[in-house]
Image (cartoon, rainbow, N blue to C red; front, side, top):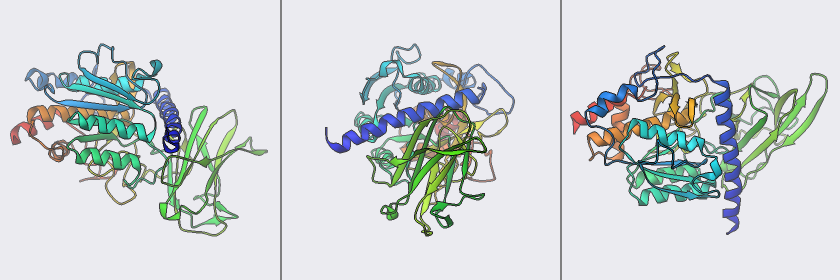
Length: 430
């Protein structure tokens, strides 16, 4: 194994830890809500496909459509929700497809696809690191799958669609596959801005050099990244503890290997007290654009805009945000656009609190919304098998309900996905 591969595996192990930590935080802090595909506020049903029975009864079930699911946590391929529909599974990392039983997230995501499109063929791939992720996508494209869903997030990138994970997703799209990706859950844990106000080598946020953390788990994960054009500049995130009278340094971020983007990461277990982050850099302002993100904690000073995460930042990828159908609004945690290069960032939204396999009390986040939309894409392809990935994206967008600002916006994109409308539109235009 070469040095780049070893570094990618190390970064992948951390990505797995971060993703599962963020998942745990959401599941613990956001009460699950049963929803239907109509998205009417206040309505509760038993599962996300209850209102799709008329579509299934009409024979539109995803038959002869293949869907690939790419996840970091693995899959329980013997689960009742997956066993009958799984055609092939493969691991591109350590631990195998079952990942030593650590597979609840992948199993839940795949089960949502199977629930929405019960006769679709499933191809399941889990991975470690960016290299494993890229090989998983290549494997799925080689098998000529129609739809790939990636309910995963790669942190420590600038969000312009040029990172390795985003490029790999775009390449899969160019290969004739519709790629659906979760926008991320960073709206409350994201800050972006220029290093143009420095005080003694410290970045000044809106209210000072301290950015306090709130509402998180015991395990903090945090990334700091900046522009590739400023790769020779040095920036560091420092974590401090305070009890109001005393303050001490807890940890400093370290350079993140296995990537061509300048970035640093910080991972630490927290004890009692309050914590804040300080970003250190050059003594003089540089104007370099910085991005500070935490999937495990809210930031005191944050920017919802621009919080979409790779691979959803890629071009030609359908980026899916999470929508709260109970309160008729985007989920407060759901990432928002635009991308760093000015694209909308979020294409559509879907229910973000769904029942799923191994998640009887609720599967929460854009990781739930994305496979729901992938299942809807499979139904649209069943209704019209000759549609190209771009045409399927158009059907899903054009059959939405506008639930945000009039027109396309950065929080909800084109609107809330309506699987039944998508099927009807695909059938009428075929």
